[in-house]
Length: 95
Image (cartoon, rainbow, N blue to C red; front, side, top):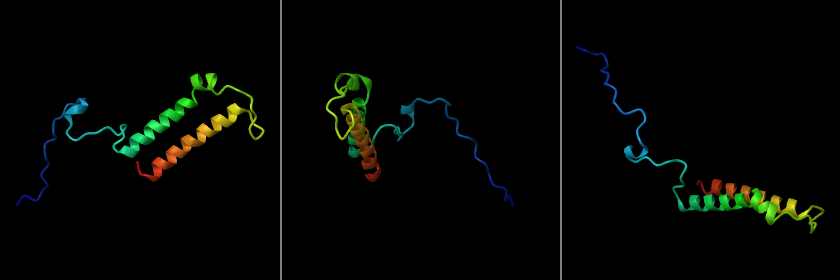
């Protein structure tokens, strides 16, 4: 009686197979749900508000002062808090 475990021959697959040749593969970088797409679009739009083309043209004002801070700081603080809010919302939705 042969009680030794039998080993299978390895499956030969190309090392660098194109993504579409693997059945059922979906990238983890693309959102899979509607809430995921909403979170992605909201995050990208809010993030664009914090980037130099917008901050240098629209938000670059010192006046008016709000709670003792220049308008630019208050606007950027609002954008960053909204970005964190989108991340928390996506986390709670298990996106």
